[in-house]
Length: 83
Length: 116
Length: 256
Image 1 (spheres, each protein chain N blue to C red):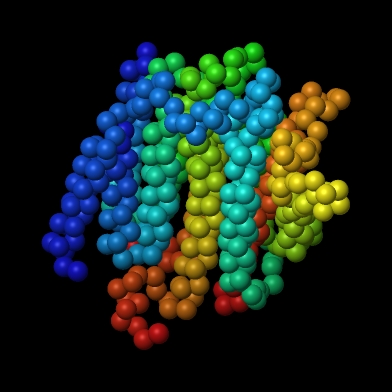
Image 2: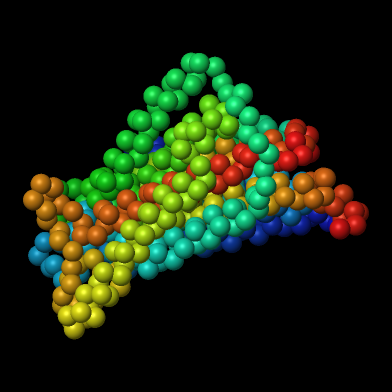
């Protein structure tokens, strides 16, 4: 039972590494913002599995909701899509 | 094993912050690096076995609670660090908008060739 | 820097960090291995027999935030305030706001309904932070999401009519900060007036400083001293701070 939770945490962290590499590699800035929101959700799940409910609340509210809104508003005034 | 994956994530973000020439990419890389460092704090505060989160259930002995619960000091640092990271992202966004209005471009290679 | 030197430096970073961290930590710690400082906080945070060091809150993280490490959180609030001031410095003149734009009727009506529920949920997470996970920072972030949903679905030009100016948001944020400052200074005033010792952010009485806020009220069976009002002040401060930043970022320039 405990080994299963460790395996799930390792799987989620490996998926986070793959998402980070995709964010650095892509040239489309809107795709990078959406992928960073998805990574925030995965990190919040890892926080919940490591018995930290306070921090899962802050990560979901601040890292997924507010940060994506700030990035999109900032992207509106810059040259839109390409790098 | 989780330490190795977090270290790989942090080094990918450091590489992107140093060697990519778009300012928006650098800001995104710094934001993801704070995410990785907060993960490292929580991972080293976890205890294997039948652990409980640091909230005492009613009717438990304090000495038994102190030997079975997860470290609360790690949670305290991460709660404030996430909010401060978000304020830093907002400040950097305002700076990037200001730079775009002044120079007309947002890549560091082209800003080096312009004259002030 | 040339390209091949850049890739060598990147590989060097990855190898160095992975090797250091794999050598230093070899897995999760065991269950009986608690550090002495963490054990002290866990043992004393809700201890009925030994009430000389307790903090009257079953949630150890909330007791750490505002009782054992109160000064650190106070300075962190100052840092956040300076961050808001830095964003407000960049935006000076803006064009006249138009009242068109916005989304369809379905999105507008559901945003108005959901706004009330999100604010209620933020208050509930903040007030019950002694017994359940939560607190000021969590509730403040959730409250900012409600205002951002309103700003995005209605257009920006309607908002000064609905009393959502930047000046009114500044006043609300200052009200939250004044609550925190007032509760910090009350023990100092008491100590100057009565002659006994009291510290500046003191929650419960100690052996050499007998000033303390009440812990057991009549209608609510447990209240952690000054923890609940200060969490409310922190929630208003953080929530209004994020709203001010978002309101300033969505203004139109004069050239657009």
